[in-house]
Image (cartoon, rainbow, N blue to C red):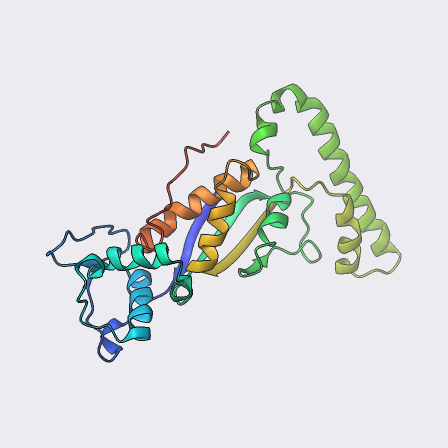
Length: 244
């Protein structure tokens, strides 16, 4: 399973009339200023602060508790004024995950998705992704798994060939044949969301009650988000989830 951050927001705070930018933090720089010290903020975090301060024209930072970006966003999180977190976004490339996982992922309708199409792409050679739970007992079912997966792939190919021999176009044949493929086949997806949307995903999917595969993916997403927006996700903790 791979979760790769491929895009994020760039902010030019000096262009906002009246706003006094913090010191700039590079990608992965998670330094936070103590009271009285120079403040550092990532693009995503500082954009959220600028949006919030615009609402009240509070450019001078008169309150010491919210004078730093971390303190300001801590208050935003406490007050649940999450609309200011919608201005910055992050995009991930994810592969090595199952089709079952992406069926759950796309339920988060505030995200945007682009996933490999089983109508256009021949997925007969796609690897099988072991669910973390199944992985614990997979060795006991290697023979049965190989037989079952091989049978599904053979049937997929046979259905495609049969339909194309009847005059079906390749896309039409594959869209019919994909119905016999297991949900554990690997898929690839690019997904984008604003920081408020990602908070909503993480709140639900880092829970021990969430699907284990989703927990692992969510943990990797949080690792990346803490690199580019540490203050926007300061109240989230990484789980001890490990690859099975």
